[in-house]
Image 1 (cartoon, rainbow, N blue to C red):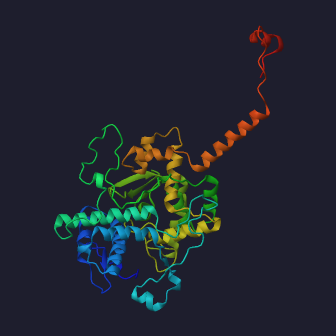
Image 2 (image 1 turned 90 degrees about the vertical axis):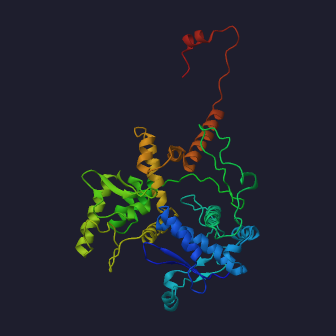
Image 3 (image 1 turned 180 degrees about the vertical axis):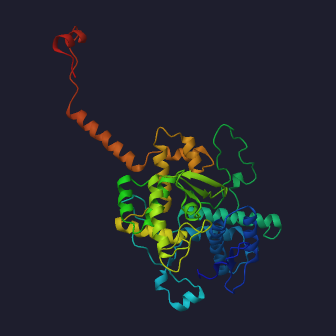
Length: 416
């Protein structure tokens, strides 16, 4: 399928992203949907995520020469099949892009290329690397976005007569949770017909010894401060990166972050070491000429020209540290690590952990009570070792009838 069109970042607060067709024209239908998302208080990162799913769908429609408002369910079915069967395009590193493509904003891709070790389990972390195909979670997210996109236009009277991405036949007309016990956890009854089944993933934490090796591989005080805050506060990566200089409060041992969902400001506690590394970074950065100001960014690039640190740069920093160990942990694994450490403390209640992590439901926080795969493997191995020892040391036969076991213990001494 030709990789035509693009999702363009505008830099405008009122319209952060635009979907551009191959002719360079903005797609008004997507612009209206983006406005609806912004009106529903969705952040720009969510709009970008939805835009990437819509771009895949529009590229599919452009390839088969079908207008978006004339798409049928057969087209949606074929798109779901295509997403399942096709290999993901591999982007070329930005250093390998020529000046002409960079000036035109074109990012070349290598069709049919295979990433090294795609889909294999990492020897250090036990996590699979990204595979050649689109993950089930990616395909499920795409189906949800497209169904919501057409639902919006159906209500506005702009789209087709029926939604190309319907719900499952048995649930399309029924009321959700019609026979649900209000005491039970809500079930997901609104499943799309072309939505794949997403396997349930258990959060993974970084073992303490591996985290120490990862921390030792960092190159600057800024990176050490970032990891110390992530692994002690449990804040999301984007929440910490967007902090301002006024947000840390070393005297209270807290840092103020803007929560992802509610956009509320919340003070979260962090370890004393995190504030020590932060102070070392600030002294070093200010000596180099990094801008200062209470309303300015807290995290900056390490080289001129000084720019506020963004998520892509922070992830690249973490990937470089991963390469030293041959690992494939992510920034979000640091939040999982902090969550496991707090949930494992018997003196810290689960509701306290829920407040620190800003989870809407306690059931989400309870996921961190689940033992990690490494812990389960260690316990099962210990079980087999105990069985082996018991087999090598058989249980003595009981005394013959007529003898009182208590009397034998008095005579010969209790067995220990």
